[in-house]
Length: 600
Image 1 (spheres, rainbow, N blue to C red):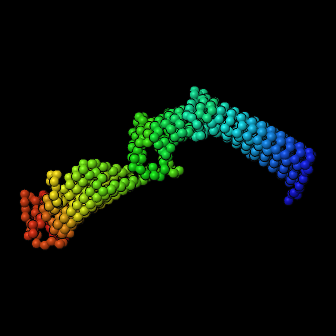
Image 2: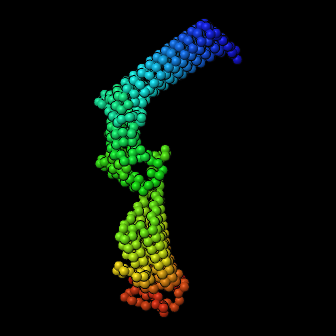
Image 3: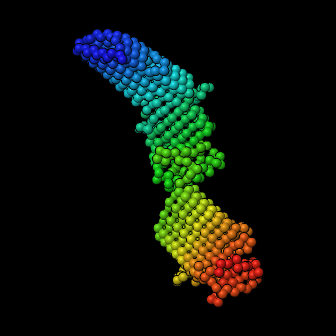
């Protein structure tokens, strides 16, 4: 193992020369001269104008305040200086790199080939990085930064910086100072974080060259000018900003305020954050490339019905290929984009899986000729209305849309001349009406495509009690649509002059009716060739059955009933009992019925 040596200086101006490997030098406060020729060394110099030279090894050099001169001709070195006008020069090492942190003062830093990391201080620094993939932080002074060939990353400060990059794919970060940027050959990217701007920002990529690089200017926090830049990543502040990009691959994140974003050619991205743009009117326009609109939401914003509707409508807009602006509810007008991304609380959303929406209304919400429509989106939505939402000529509508939706109406939906309508849409929907749905009004449940479950409570479609505004018979309608649906009505459906309609549509449907069913029209689906099942749990009065299919074994459970008699009436089979119960099978002759069709 190498021997470790320690040399301690004095408070005077020391001269230290060492050749041994792994040496630690602790020099004092004077103007010291320190020279090392081998090993991996640590040199600590105090305040004073020190001259430090190392010619080999991987060295750590800590120079104090003062105008220091530091030269490291080879190796991978870590150099830190204090306040003072320091001159730091390093050599090159292919595949390696130095880390240099210059303190306050007008520093001059020059590095050779290699991947160096350089940090300027608060003074007026001149930084020249050699060939390699360098990372340069210019600091807060009025700095001049020059890089060689390689893919360099340069960060400007907040003052007047001059940045010149060489050949290679360079990335230049600016914060809004009065910077002059000259990018060399390669695909260079200018990243401008202007989020702290105290006035409106204007960014304009002017005429480009045949190689696709652009010159232009930025006004906001000072005025920056640039040449030779191909790509832009822009973040603006809270004012009414105007941003125009070129033909490279650009990313624009306009902040709060009513912003105008015009993307040029190239595959660009424009980012819009809803939370910071409330009340603003933004205009985003894509360009000639394949452009992406990215929308950022909080979780609460994302789950709102308005946002979900906007997203679904905008996806349709994109699919149509229209170049017309699409105006979101938040005030964003977007045109000429090809793709959509959605970010919710920092996570990208899979737009093929749309979350459900929850909508809740209380009692009597559309009473006295009011009208309320609750509209879900493409996900699994939950829509709930309280009691008597459509009382007295009101209108309460629930539209589930695509997805497996759950729609619930409380008791007395459509009471006294009202209308309560539930449309599940595509998907396996669950629709529930409480007691007395359609009492002297109309309650309609439409399942749509899918295996739906529709349930009406006691007294659906009844006509009960006084009506001072003109008598309207109660009506309850259940339509299953395509799919294997289950439709259930509670006791006393259609009594007192009301009516009930149940239509299963295509599919193998199941119908269940409670006791004392009156004025029922039941449709099992014309020609669907699926076996339907009907169960009556009690008495059945004035019931008509359409599209009974003998050949596919439709069946009715009338297990609680006895002493039925059969007669033919105009080609229809009518089953009756002594207590006036009746079932009428439309278009079915008695000879076509058998005991297998009934569960007696």
